[in-house]
Image (cartoon, rainbow, N blue to C red):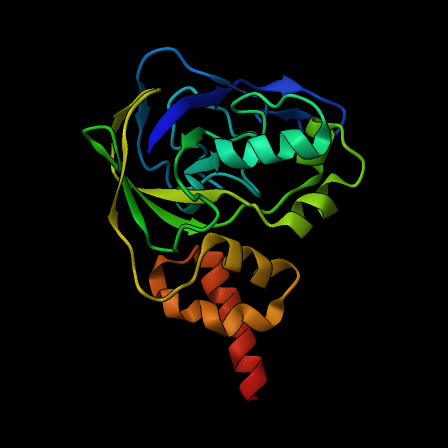
Length: 222
């Protein structure tokens, strides 16, 4: 298991984003050399966990629970076959393009060591948005991505440091609750009946998902 690339994006204006300034950093490109990774701060204040990477719409993106976004090269390859066109590393807006790692099947709270320094923890799957659809240029992309549920994973930074393309990825810890990034994604999008099952992942969940699951369970019990 390894990183194929570490990808960062620069702000650029586009016609398809709801970000107030009309800019997005979703078009991420592989970085040359090491990239510093650190917790960026709370959502709404903090942006990306990667130095030099733009998160322009901090209403919905960035922050400690979404500091880093990873996507598997294997899933990109599957989309290439389905869409009939090449997809470069970083084209899904992912910071980390991985090889040999089941990213969507990673467990909430699973911890990865990347290179000699950095430790990251899985928090959630990625929910597609209109900016992602506009960037991809595919009609009905949000629905297609949601239906496939090969969502990739958001991660929080446990131990900061530097990473670079080619770094090995080691799974340091896997919890035994069975709640994956893909399950979390389905629970908050198309299968709300799964929300109670997410509580087994506890505080490792993205804080917004944890609050949503608790609210749903309370409503069922009322």
